[in-house]
Image 1 (cartoon, rainbow, N blue to C red):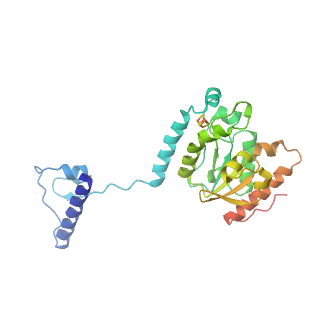
Image 2 (image 1 turned 60 degrees about the vertical axis):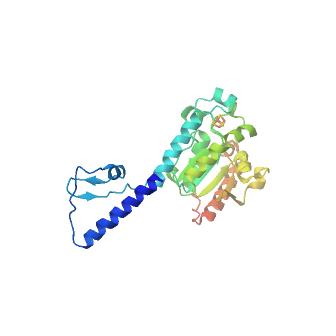
Image 3 (image 1 turned 135 degrees about the vertical axis):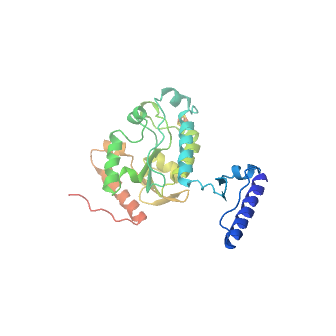
Length: 257
Ligand code: SF4
C-alpha cells in the first residue's frame, strides 16, 4: 500500500512538472529545508535548484535469470539428497552454455572426466559430441550442455530412478531458466525421462516429442557411439541430427568427404 501511494505521488509530481513545462516554466525553485523522504526513496535527484524525477531502470530479465541460475548452481553444489553420490563425488557438475541456447543437449549423468573438472561433456564422449555439434553447424556457444543428474554415479553406473527423482526439481528449474529452444536427449535414460515413455531408445529415436513445450529429439549418448566399432550408432546419430535440423528449419550441411 505504501509503495502504491508513493507511485501515485510520483505520477502526480510528473503531471505537475509536465503542466508547468507546457506553460513555459523551465526551472522549479527548490526548498532545501522541505522533507525529501519520498523523493529520495524513489531515486529523485536534485541540485538544489531543479527537481527532476529519475526512474530506476527495469532489471534486465536475462540478468535476473543468470542470477537465479547462479543461486541454483550453489544449491546443487551443497545437495546431499543421494547419499552414495554425495559421498563419492569430487564435485557437482551443473551445466554450461548460454541462456536461450539454440539447442540443449541432455545426458544422463557426469562421468569421471566431468566429475574431475566440474564441467559437462569434457571426456572422450564429450569431444565426440563437440564434433557432432560442429557438424550440425553449431559451436558450443550455441548450445547448453547438462545432465539429468548432477553427480557422478560410482564406476559410471547408470543413475537409479531414485537418484533421477531426487534431482528432477533441479533439472526442471535449470531448464526453465536456460530456456533452450530445442532439446536433444542423449542416451536411453535421458530419452525415457524426457519423453515420459518407458521404451528402448531404438523405439524412441526418429520422432519429434515435446518436453514442456520444447521440441525434443532422442539419440545415442556419445559414450555409446564411441564404444560402437561398427559405426552404426554414429550413422544413426547423424540421422537424428538431421531430424533435429529439419525440425529447427535449418539446412542440413552436406557430409564432408
Ligand atoms: S544427483 Fe542431484 S539430487 Fe542427487 S546428490 Fe547430486 S545434486 Fe543432489
